[in-house]
Structure formats: structure tokens, C-alpha cells
Length: 225
Ligand SMILES: [Zn+2]
Image (tube, rainbow, N blue to C red; front, side, top):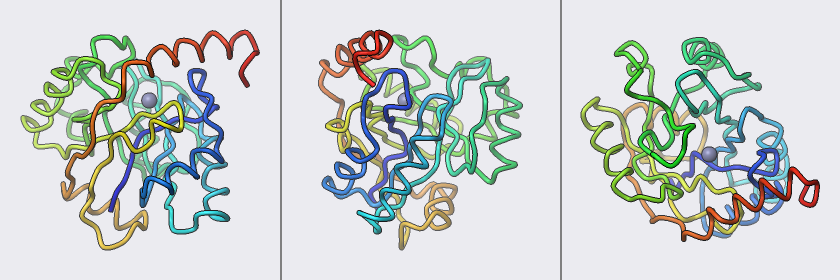
């Protein structure tokens, strides 16, 4: 199954992707499942799930969130409700309480101050990690993805590839091939935990970073909604 575990909608301060466009693009590029992971928000994820149910019923929508913690941003996948920013240990507790999984997005992206600070995480925390992004399409320096791959291999953690799309046209740049029989949440979770993943795709073109900066400015000014 072709799955993208990390993307944003207009409910993130640096994206203007409408939930309708996200569903249309994900279906058009042949994804079987997508996780919507807005910054500290799940409204976009719920909307995308509702829209997909109507217009693309074969597309599984995983409710996710990119949560701000004291050790950087982490991905909460398969959650049920919003998790507010908090120390990482508290966030992990909440993810588990909701039956979700913890993943580390772009752990060595030196250009993003919000990257998860893996060097501060002890073994107890690392053991809670279900997957590491070894290919994040928005990492500007390719060797920083390579470092993430080495880190995951060192700790025997499954690797995922994600678009981290902030604009619909980025969806499909990278995805994870997950060896599961169907795209139900249960099947995806089990395959992920068993490490049955392969990374696919490529880096997004450099202009996506300029567009993100523009989005932040225009959204703050109220020009983009
Ligand atoms: Zn992101």
C-alpha cells in the first residue's frame, strides 16, 4: 500500500492547502492512505477524513498531528483528538493513551529549528518511536536524510518516506510502500510496527521553501486564508 504519513492543510500556519484539494491530489497520485499532520491541530485531519469518505472512499485518512514538544516536533499518528504542545514524555503518554504511534519527522534537518532533538532523547524515549522519516521530501540537504536513515538503522527502527506537503502539488513526491493486505488502520499499524516499510520518492523542488515563507507572510497579513 502506498502511504504518506506526513502532510499539512491550511490549518497549519505555513500551508494553504484546502482539505478538498488534498483529497483530490492524494487520490490522483494513487495513494492508498494519508496522514494529515497539521502543527498542533487536528481540524484539517477531521475535515479531510469527512471529505474523503464522500468523494474518495477507498482513501484511508489517518488522523495525525505534528506536535510541538520540549525536544522538537514529533508526529502523532492514529490519534483521536488534538494533543496540545507539552513536554515529549507527556505527549508520548497521551499518544499511547489514544492508541496512536509516535514517529520522528526530519530528525537531522539542520535548517529546521523545530527538528526532533534525538541527541537529547534517552533509550526509554527512543524505544517508544514507531518510525523515523528517512526521506522527508522537504529536507533541503540530502545527506541529512541519510543521517536519519543511519540513525533508524542503528536503533532498529522502521523507516518511512513522507512528502511533508504544505501545498497540494507536493503530495506524491515521497511515500512509504507498506506491506499490508489492505489500507485499514489496523493493517497499516501492524505492518508499520513489524517494520514492513520501504521508502519511495524524491526531494521536492527548492521553490517549495520560498512558497512556505510566502505562505507564512500572507497568512499573517490575512491575504491568504
Ligand atoms: Zn510537517
